[in-house]
Length: 308
Image 1 (cartoon, helix red, strand yellow):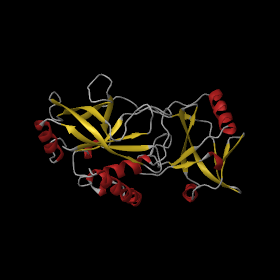
Image 2 (cartoon, rainbow, N blue to C red):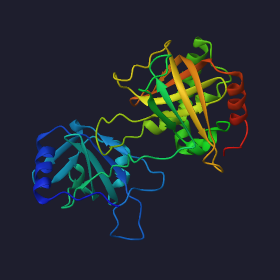
Image 3 (cartoon, rainbow, N blue to C red):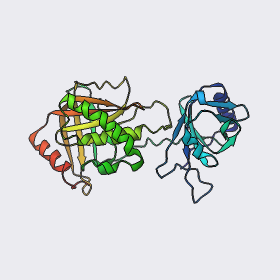
Image 4 (tube, one colour):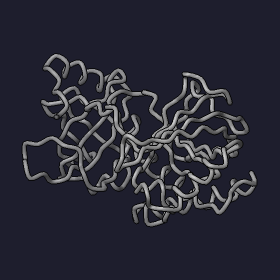
């Protein structure tokens, strides 16, 4: 199912908006498709580039001139790209080819502009959790889901991070290790690999279907001692270092969906890590109350492949 194309009148409004406003755009190389008529999101690992408003000039004829842009944009010349941006908080995109003019790279806005498809559909997870903003369980829990479900209950490995992102991830790790040691609850530090992986993924510029939508927290790491949550800066979600919260976890057996287990814990935020390039944060939450049988269950789950 593809995003709907804008009408002619809507396109004219968007074009005027681009000409008049200071609008950043994100450019991503498109992958070759077997079906040339197909508009799709690239499936392979490609890198997006965010172009700031001061580096963009939009002509009323529908031509976007790019100036003083990152060197990587030069590799896009002559290639098909996906250009994404927000119009009144609505995510839009179009497919075009990067041209070369006397002033530098340029892109022509085509006739067809599409709404970015909303993929916020309900999903089924074998493990999820509700975070309560107090140590008392209530009905206002905030939904948490695995960031990378298949690799959550296994030992974090550096190879989980794409090779081309590992240099940046290592720079993050060098910053996170001293911070974890200062807080005295760094453990063996394996969870920091998951934090680095989350940060380098979050650093990639992207445009959603709706700007500013609050998303579920991402569960980055869990064992019998801690759970690490990834999220974006948002004043409406008051997670603070040193505060204690309650959490209800739900586990479902893959081979027996009717069998589930609920685990209730309280945890204290030992440390909050912050990305240097995006709005991403990661909260390292140390369990402060956990039943002995639940502790054993989490330990066995984190050290076995029973649920994998």
